[in-house]
Structures are given as C-alpha cells and as structure tokens.
Image (cartoon, rainbow, N blue to C red; front, top):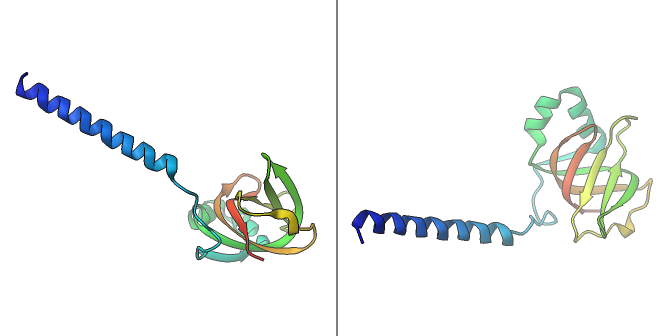
Length: 139
C-alpha cells in the first residue's frame, strides 16, 4: 500500500474514533444539578418579566443561559409529558408570566396555587412568557 493511502486511512480512523468519543460523551451527559448550583441572578418573577418587557435585547444577553433563582406567587401548575410539570408564576402582567419547567427530580406535589415559591432554573428566553428550564424547587 502507498504511504499516502496509509496516512489517509489512519486519519479517517482517528476522525471516526474522535466522533464516536464525542457522541458517547453527549449521549451520557447529565443535566446540571441546579439544587446545588449557585445562581447567577436572584430576582422576583415580576422584576424578571419586566426586564424582558422593557428591553428584550438587553434582557436576552443578561439572562439567557444563566442560572436564575426566581421568587413569585404560583399562578398554576400544568402537567407535561408524564411526571414533568410546568409551574406558572404571576408577574402582574395580564399578557405575560414566568413559566418554570421542572426537572424530573423535582416534585411539584407541595405546590399550591396562590403560595409563594422560590425556583431555580436556566433561562432559555422570552416568547410572550419568560421561560426557565431544568428547574428545581428551592422553597
């Protein structure tokens, strides 16, 4: 076999093994444990929604992909995909709220509409509502 074919074959095998390693890493990657993580911001649901309503571009760069600990009054609890639930927090705005999608480890049983709650989650953006994902109930 020619030397150039051997080099190309070796490079192809190395590339394939690298791709396999990356694929296995991503497949086995766990969600962040937000129960133990330090929040980047501690804010109320009213202030968080107002920040997005006042200047969405600034709020996106400030809050998206950051861990936020938000305190607010439970407006409703919605079941989603089996045991995962979304908690909707009041913001004082009739058009917008803060929606916290709980992680599979969180148990929304103790939540009651009208009670105040503190939830920690990762902000994913604003689509008429402020969206927090992988949330965990703090208190």
